[in-house]
Amino acid sequence: MTHDIADFDILILGNGICGQSILFEMINSPSFDLDTLKVGQVFCEHMAPACTLNTTSVVGLNGTSRGINDLGDLIIDSFHFTKKLVEKLGLKSFYPGTHYFLQSADEKNKAKFIRRHGEGSSLEILDREFIGVKDENFVVDSEELFCELEEVISSNNIVRINEAIVNVSDEREVTLLDGRVIRAKKIICCLGAYSNHFLKNISNEHLDFSKMVPGDFLKFRDVNLGDKSFVVSSGQHNLVYRANSHTVLIGGTTLNNLWDSVDYVKIIDQYNYYKNLFGDLLPDFSEAFLGSGLRHKGRRRRPFCGELREGIYSLHGVYKNGYTFSFFLANKLLQNEIKGSI
View 1 (cartoon, rainbow, N blue to C red):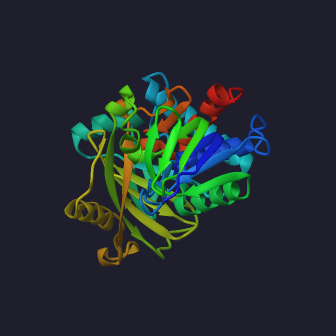
View 2: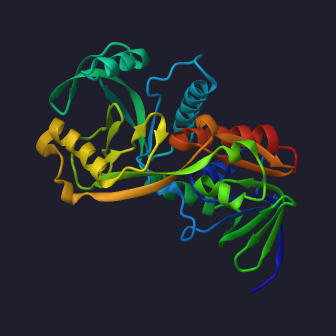
């Protein structure tokens, strides 16, 4: 065991979508000179894997309207920010697609649908006729995006430390499992579902009311449903088609605005629902891979992006909007709070 001490100007904790977004923003911003700043990153995938690779990763507005509440405004602002970022910087793993929302025949659920999306009209999906609405979205290939961002990050002057975190102190010191202690002028915590665990010694109201929540999904490979990605949503069910990899995912269940672990029976129920809609276009259930991931659900579903203690910041709770909140809030944090303070 060693007790070496390393010092950094900026230290990022975590390598999920939030941690990668912070570094990606820093690399692409003229406000941060990585040749003069000493920037480090600590992560440990085998002990605290990021949820980035275990998600259905859909980016869309889902019928959200501006002016209803701050969360809705954030969803809209972050979507359009990320859309421009994708176009400007050419992120290849964001695939434009169509999001189909199927209108329920049940009168109570139909009324909820109309309040959110408006009255449905005739839709054609895979040569089948439905009633619903459609909107633009992005279907993100999460594995491809992870590798795309990794390539950018690893080619820059960033010290990367693959070791488990033992403690984060309010003195801006991070203790690692191998005994090393790392200090930094600014620490940015991007610890996702593990935020409450690793930041247990730092009291914060948002953290106190946030929690780790699981979610499961089915993945089918080698399914060719055409050359354009799409999502079909019916109430609390999602079917996601990634055209680039011919992959179908079923899951991403929302129950009363909460993300819950989906047990074996409910996954089968979701599968059977779409199997009844699309028949032989979907493979047998036995061919599915069952995926599971963790999310960090913030207080009232809001993310947190700000200072926890002097010089210690956190970006967490991005929940079901991780692929837009992360890029948008990384920009806000670095440009509004970190820039010029080193």
